[in-house]
Image 1 (cartoon, one colour):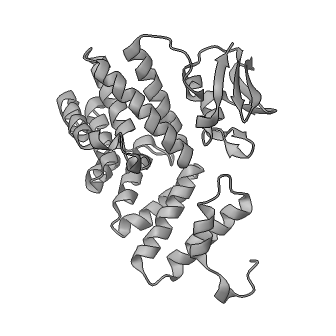
Image 2: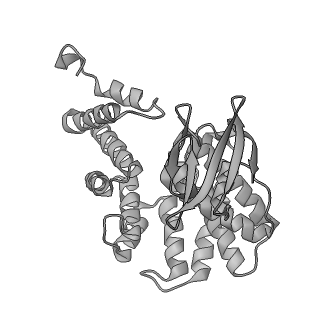
Image 3: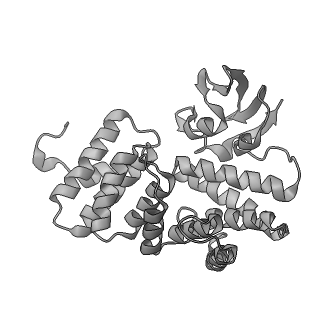
Length: 304
């Protein structure tokens, strides 16, 4: 440590500084993990220890170290934390640690009592996973959630916390399947896209990119149009295996080259290669910032 003594070490300050960083170095990440472990192991306050557990679980989730994420989620579960139970549901539902178990996932989703847990239970009713398939029950859950979320979609205070995008896309896809989709679904999908882009701008997470893909696919299905690019997220629906995309940023023109290499679609940007649009949107940097962090400053996007 750079501190002169152990007594001067403040793990809470390390935590605050870490969350100000857009692209932390390996050393900064190490210091953050060290600070959270310090809080978990030494704080006399249960709420502080739980905060340390929460922060490490989210940190390991974001870098896809799922075994370590699960370790801290299990600690939080024992402390009765709803978020940790919810995220354990995702671990088991998607088999992120190598073993898929719908029964455990359903139990955690039901026990956590969160909105994330509810829409995942709706998924399980729709697909007949651990429970008998019941599209009526699925729709009931999603429509009840939408009633709760309507007031949040236009309120900037809820950009980071609302699950409106996740619920809106599920309800739209259900309506598409039953041929009941409407202009209302299209409006909700555009709102969902806007909220998710702002969320990814302020708190990047690879799962947001996957949800955005679902939103864009549903938007195309509902609109039936191959509309022009709105922003770089439309790369997720760009089917061409060869082409270029140009855009303006800070009065300079940047170019993305898309081509096939050994059977895979590669995105080349600023001398770096990315494995498709999802990998590009998750990892690409421009002038030290994630490209999704400055997406609203990217102008005049053109595809060729």
